[in-house]
Figure 1: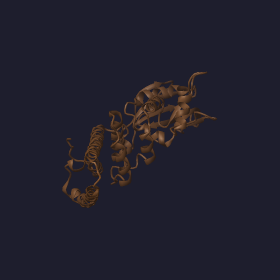
Figure 2 (figure 1 turned 90 degrees about the horizontal axis):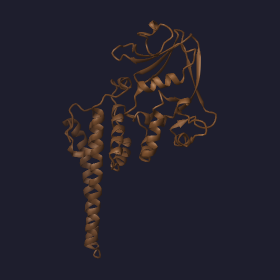
Figure 3 (figure 1 turned 30 degrees about the vertical axis):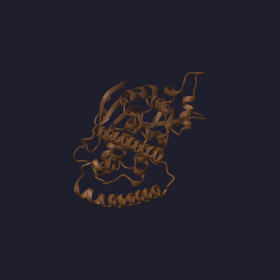
Length: 325
């Protein structure tokens, strides 16, 4: 596997865990890790010698059974190593793609952080069991996200993903295509009258969303003194224009913290399309104008640039170069 140059310590640490000695890494970092590896190797050798001695002393052992057991063990470990390497490949491929939300990573760019050893221990066990391409790519995206921002994915999320079926994933992906930021308008995701709502109930029972049952949830959008209200997901912003102080309350289903972590793993969401559909779903006469904006990351003030007019009843001159809140 070709390893790109200029890798961060977190990437190297992840590759070392998944690939072992196949990774070409800086000498200083390698020397630091080599002491741990040598100590582990010595321990493994002692255990291996003990097992060999035990087998040799067992006069009644069937050589054919011993050979078959050894073959099974070798094949099993080979498959695990293959799975780990495919996950590593998927991680590197993901890291080659700039993240949708670059602003969150920039916040941590000047802070040296490392992936937790406990997190990697648990991740490695799941990665080595990922035998399908879908799961290998999924775990690769998880590891890439954790490399970019250590602590991004909780241990609970890892456990959840290990049991997440493809059918459940497709259901969540369909729901997520109506979510902007952390909420979906109820009018977009609720089935029509007398239609089955079990999918929403299952998502709620899984701990991914809230508001599908019971009294439901609402979200309030407040227009500031400048006549603007903002909803933000990553570098995409929906800007509404209305009378200062006006409040709009909409019925929504919201993502739980677990659901928000899973949302980061969906690579095929079109944020602008979702923003457009969201804006129309919550439109009321008091919302005079609506725009899709992008955050100018090159500007220290993080100013907004209008990229699309969703609807407009009044001039939008005051919106240009407005600082995101």
